[in-house]
Length: 454
Image: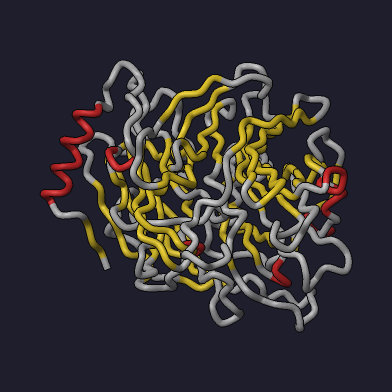
């Protein structure tokens, strides 16, 4: 099923873009979140299925993004940077009304787009779903939906959960990789799993558990963020589990390169066929056992020297969330607080206890320049988006507002993957919440900002 905004909407949006100025000579001025252009008038996402949006330059320059609407339909959209026109496609009608169902997207070398998505904790009979364009850059050419039952690995005990959630596809083009496509997800025993495809998604290896601590098969649910340089390495940042369940939830790091996982200093952790590994065999970027302050991971990226950068939150209390920035300097991890970021953003019903008190406004690294972060924190009682930049590995920061004076909360920013710093068009996307009571009860839009033209 193909759908698109009406011509009138496309014209209105293009006009709005012209007034903001893809060709502006300076950064656009901050404004209320509701005054930034909409990418999706009805859309939400979680922050553990990525990439949520990618830039692709082929016959046309486009930003592709994915979200789930308030009816639970899984959506893909394409913003044409020349015309301002937005096309949308319904990948799956009413899969599940839950913001965890947003798709992750991967632009293949030939210009086709792939999308991966699943229900929130879908069981063995509700596997990962995947669709791919049949023609490059053609939003009308999405092929048949496929089921990826990657948890079906007899190596693991049959009694363990085989649920699916949170997809993260990554492509490596380097000679040693031979164009492998990788997929990470929450799968067997609720652990983070990994599979690879040597043929751009036609076939996949059986899923393997990435990491787990001995004795936690049925307990901990690790959360993971992943990013690649598109050539030869993948960066992973992950936790013990959910901060609600893990009072000493820590942050770990591992790098995939040449068929194995390594610490940031190059020490080998494990080869693919030796998985899983113990989390503490990886880098312990933040050890909550030392502070008794739980954490949650938000983003990971690679800097210009090929070194990892991690954004995460420390959670001293449910109403006290702290944005942190950890960066490998070639010898050690430098971990610094950026700013206090308030408490949770969901609008707790009166008289009720908040079900997700660790839902921060959010923080995202600019993958093209991870010295830049986009974060959300409350200003005058409303969550606003800000752009922060450091020139000294996080020791000091300068900041500028993206949204200001908003009526609605602006949360869960995402910096578009593969958008070069000299490219015109939006740099960041985020949710603008008319209502967000829970991940199953929301009325939100996806908004976007614009970078100055070169």
